[in-house]
Length: 122
Image (cartoon, rainbow, N blue to C red; front, side):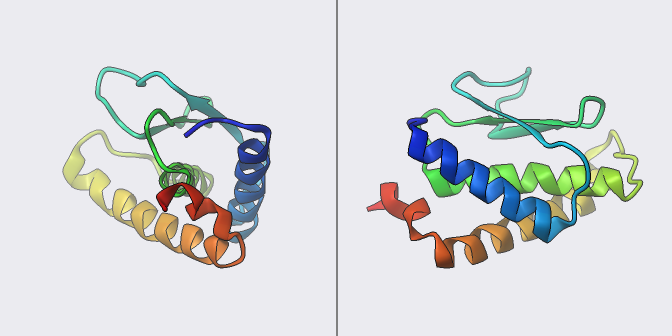
């Protein structure tokens, strides 16, 4: 994904959509990165300490990047609801499942009125 002014505006619009739909409070900090994050390759990361999201965008479709943003913002919502994220995968899985469901839903409904999120899939 190339970060053009149009893409930046689309991402901002999507983040506002997520903030409203998820009922988030406070500031939302998102970084779009061309570099992999952390020790484990991943499409995105939510830091519960800084409450920030980093999304890897290199060689990815717009809709896919938006899905990752929504996934990580769902983790922010979980934190705001008082979730203390477990360290082990087995106990973390229900929170990942919720984030996967919500991210798909948020992208699908946003995409119905913003078809340009699929422009690079043609």
